Length: 87
Picture (cartoon, rainbow, N blue to C red):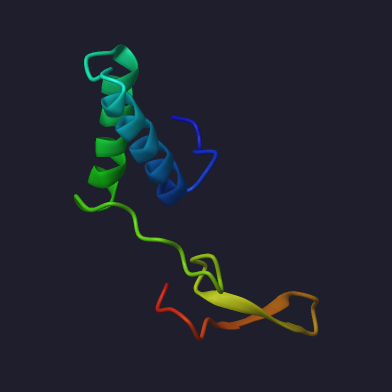
């Protein structure tokens, strides 16, 4: 399995837009529709049956921010994100 090129939230939105366009143009029985539907369902299944949540706009879902400081050995110091509860 290859790593996803974009996060689940962005890909899910793309798939929902594609599915809506295909439905609107009467292409529900096409291979493209079925493939997009299956992929969107797989994303939902990875997220407990729910559409993926948007990542925090402050930290991008990382749960921490760069404090701007570094440890004596040169590693960046992160602080908890004040905007979310990401872990």
